[in-house]
Length: 461
Image (tube, rainbow, N blue to C red):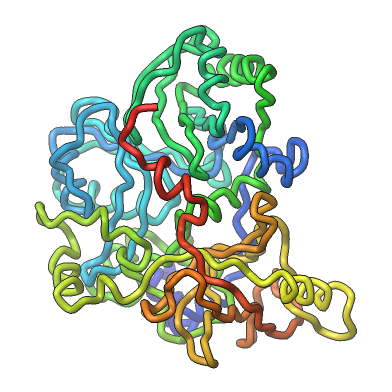
């Protein structure tokens, strides 16, 4: 008899232990050149000139079409859907029945009664499950990422970003760039091909995400590169790509709160024993046998601004209770700027010291897992969780995204990050090492001022 998701958790001694011992390698951007020049120059280019990201391969697409498409999305999203016309997108956020994060993705309104969700599998799976089992009059089709899919994607997806991005678009289209408000879409022609475009950006700089049929990618790609020569357009490789969130402040991989609720057993059975949620490795200095200690709320990740109690959705009652109890202001998302001396010492001990040193810090992204949780301490007490960690050559610093108890979230506060695992793990990417403590200073998230202001402005660019 085939093992179920719940069977795996029971055999492992719980969900936390299942993920902690996962032998799955760390996530990478598949089928994308890792460095076109070098990752330092590629990082700097998105602040100084213009860059082109290849987003064709690392995300899943789910199309939802039919008379009940909006009804389905309203039932799952914390967001309001009252104003969601064609050619607009939203950052779709979903929670479980108790108000804890399932995840988020970008949701495009493509045509009447047709939407497309793009992102990592957690919310894609959640939407697909409810579409297929909830009795909705919808049809869905899915295009997984290139690490899973056999063959080529259905669509290409590129992103142009940086101070010179609109100059590149002007040259590539032979016309003035479209005036778009944030997260609105349009169409224009590049290389003789019609493309769809979303006003977006990944590190606070102006930009457009463009996509179209895979068969037209080479014409569009070549035309963009040709137009970009006059503006020092730089292609960003897979190594630098995952560091842009350190500057934009987006939290990429919250642990989906699906493991402990008996109401979600049917969902776990639908996912199966080989799903992303069952095999993704968990790591970091924070360890608990209780998987719920890893769950977070949308308020922890600064998504309270997206929650709208104007519709009935899964988790609404729980979120309303959190607001009533003041839990919406209990923790805050922040950026941590790690102490340079402590980071230098940790890297030195991991590579050149006698005996086991600190856990190796890969650069520019230091993570070695999928779900990462490091302890943040003040006077030895855990006051928050540090998640996405990496180096920014723009800031000349090691950074991480975190959420912190309100008492320690004021920018300028000094905290300590614990780096490395202290609970034995058989993950193949974890070498013999010792935990080290690294001082860090709390700063806003997004760290970059432009990303906190102009990036989400409703003024058309």
